[in-house]
Amino acid sequence: EDQVTQSPEALRLQEGESSSLNCSYTVSGLRGLFWYRQDPGKGPEFLFTLYSAGEEKEKERLKATLTKKESFLHITAPKPEDSATYLCAVQAGSARQLTFGSGTQLTVLP
Amino acid sequence: DGGITQSPKYLFRKEGQNVTLSCEQNLNHDAMYWYRQDPGQGLRLIYYSQIVNDFQKGDIAEGYSVSREKKESFPLTVTSAQKNPTAFYLCASSNQGEFGTEAFFGQGTRLTVV
Image (cartoon, rainbow over all chains, first blue to last red; front, side, top):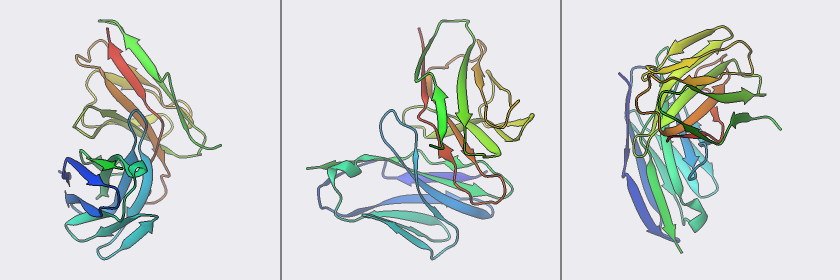
């Protein structure tokens, strides 16, 4: 059974204080690892797809990396508008659907 | 604009009542999904459909039913058999052709039992 574990559950940062969110996964045959951002009361917004170990993708202050066991979402010099819940999901084996972690709730204080 | 539309945004259900949540997409995606989100538990898969007139149960299908009569539409019915229906429901769609294809989500329906 595919498992996705995100840590920490919650993270509070001061504006400009860089940090990383972790997504550990146990799957058979990773097809893709996905990062989403979710604001309160809204649907998840797609951020990145990573396919193979060593791959990196960047978007503004966010950078996602992938190893064979985990993915990191690095946030550089965050701003209050980066506050949200960040979700990690995997697609593996013959399954088309995504398996999600429980998310990391990020709060960036001004 | 292309996207996924869920309605209504808020829905209230009385005990013993069936309710239907609407999901429409104009992205020309073959696959559609329903997820349930509870606080602190992430998203759990209820049902998914890879093609019209076909759908499969997800991890928590008990008490729910779906139909896929049109490519654009994938309504979810929460039946009276679902004992704890209060949750945030999310519909998503994706291209079917390749693995590793991201899913796009609607804005959700918040269902509350009154």
